[in-house]
Image 1 (tube, each protein chain N blue to C red):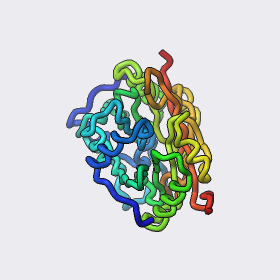
Image 2: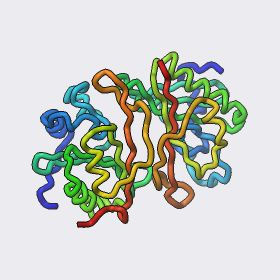
Image 3: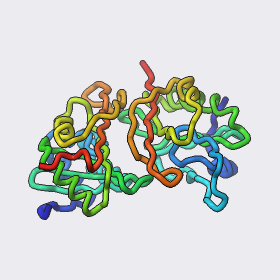
Image 4: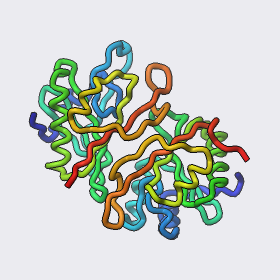
Length: 149
Length: 153
């Protein structure tokens, strides 16, 4: 995956703002209710790494309690791109399992269903968006679950 | 049980032999002699809120988010006050809902530490999700669960 461009937190915040709608809930940030400085601060606090590939943004947060696990997020609905990114994390970060927290009804849900993740739970009313509380689905996959095409 | 704000004199309540980040940190048996106790720092930024119950333990609300009105709960109980754990967790949930005006409090529960199952349920928390191999404990990765209470208002 050679054309993956790493973004520092301020650049990531600007790129998330430029992504129409798909970036809401990306690693828990929300470009609608947070300004760029708040998003960059939140990404720094989480220790998040954000990458750009073409129009899509991909990100991960290593699990500090278990270095072989990472929380991943994407703004694209393309499962192949996600699979490629997870392969990259497997090689360079030595991750063996992945977690994704996806707002219910968002486009990213089909992405994770399409690349071998399964749902392990639902966080009730975890997010407040457009006037109501939304559930967040928790997805999980190990390296063995990922579809290889 | 009353919670009050943290003062510098309460420092000894902030460390103990529990798994760090746990929703209900009860002292673990068989804590290795040379292992450092788990410690939380005194409050340093606006994303966390630290309270103590004198003589019993501490309650920390981490990742407080005022837009989504939620916080992650961390509780640490002193070895000599394990019997008060039930009161402390109920007080922590009530403080989050009434005083901090949160809508949702959640936290990590690790089944491998054998927490008494009724304690969280009696405080109104429910299991919402399980994440396999989410934490390193006792020489191997073990699953962790997310438990949460949601205020209906």
